[in-house]
Image (tube, rainbow, N blue to C red; front, side, top):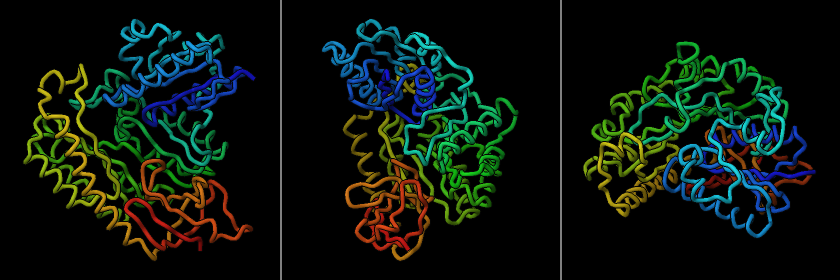
Length: 433
């Protein structure tokens, strides 16, 4: 069978795009290899990221690695699409002529046609899942209508476009038939969902309908924007047993001057939202993402950010250094005058604080029992997760294989109950009960 190597870089939204494209390849008689260096595939297609400097560098390095493979004759054709190609198509064509064609983020039909295939409309909503078969991302919208000053996504991916509830239910039912048990709901901004096509926020309705799909046991919400957070979503998470008591809300900062420069609202609404979430859902796990080093972040503002992390004690936290992106409001209106070393040092300081918090929170889980899903088997352990952890980015529960009778060995994707017997900064150790 003919093969295509499909390499995906960047965020989970790119993963969904690649999975949809792979369904077209498969329907045209190709075997798809995901993120592989296997040169038995003579066609390579790279889905790029263009969000921040580090991601762009990774995309360029990956393209050049496959350019070298093409020069050696290991592959015959190389195609590039996604955010980097959308943003810098003309520059890339001039600088890397070895690439056969570049495509933007919405040109999946053109990719299929250029490779010499027929685009099949009857596959809309179908995907070849590249994640472990028991979980999958469900992208509920494309683009973004927010005006965050540092972000290039709106002019890369365009205005917010919600998918209809009907289409998303069809897609989720398809995924459930493939064995998916956990849906990770994503968009650039999930809380905006529905405003463009239904004229009101419809995320809670969508979550409720998804929870009624047979075979779906967990639904996890990512990338929720904090301003105008829909109250009915909080109610749905609190009352619906299939919605994980987990939410990913990128707050980015807490200092009002920095938030103003970021065009991200104010800290009063952030504190009110956190208090409301924890009052109505006492056991909720809060994940956030922070951005340090944005213009206007002086030492006082950074100290306020550190105090915010110490006082709120987020269950999960990631932090990035500000990267000036050409064309954004910040790049046009502010001087990027904080040294790179200072930015990186601030990232390290925040993560040191979070390490201590994570270790403290994990230690309190010792002796408690949790329902977990088995993600994989690695070395001498089953790797599992609680409902309070998203795959790839959050804590894992490690279960020693030696403590499990062979006739009771669970399989990947199974749910089991475990008792936590010890913990580390970012890992828990458990035994099946």
